[in-house]
Length: 245
Image 1 (cartoon, rainbow, N blue to C red):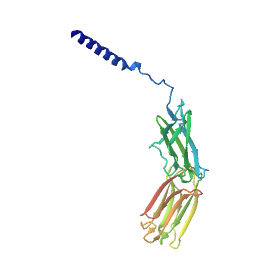
Image 2 (image 1 turned 90 degrees about the horizontal axis):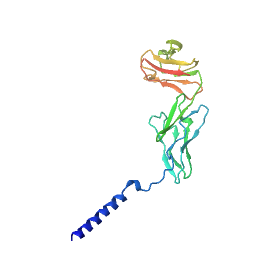
Image 3 (image 1 turned 60 degrees about the horizontal axis):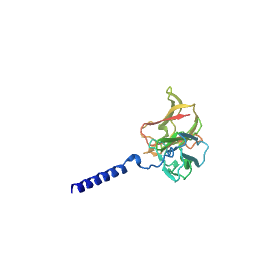
Image 4 (image 1 turned 90 degrees about the vertical axis):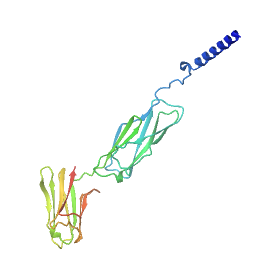
């Protein structure tokens, strides 16, 4: 009986040894490494001058991998929250696939130049894992001419205005008062590059809209679809600071 128990114990010990040998992590077959399979954006920055562009401008966003794979690899490129671009200015899905056996793939980023603000630098930052791409663009309007248009209320005699150079607070242009029979006024002015402040005044303190007529004013860059300021409803005065490149 004792011999039978010994045989049973020996068989049990041998079985435990087989189990532990089979669980040895050093003996598990592993897939041999095939190299770096990380995927990243191929460029880090690009710049577009959209001054003369019309409609859509298309840019290919390229991603690359150090090593090809035997299967399709789908990735998603995201737009970083630090981007200053408006969602109305661009179209980008961010979905892209590297086909099996390939190292690169591309997807389109479309910028609608018609809705990009003039004289405003924008940056769209795309992110893929640890890589990023800054797409910077701007649309210039190179002019030193500004246009002032005033539609008077019933009391043009109360309206005056001036433009001051902020570097020394000197008055470079001014106008008014006008007459109560005047209805509109326009003046085109040329300014040197710098920062200026336009101020319109109403002597009575009720602006030019809307108690005694529907008065209004606009100040624009000449030849550019860029409005510096539009107004009419104010009290004694209204000021706007602007820059000429």
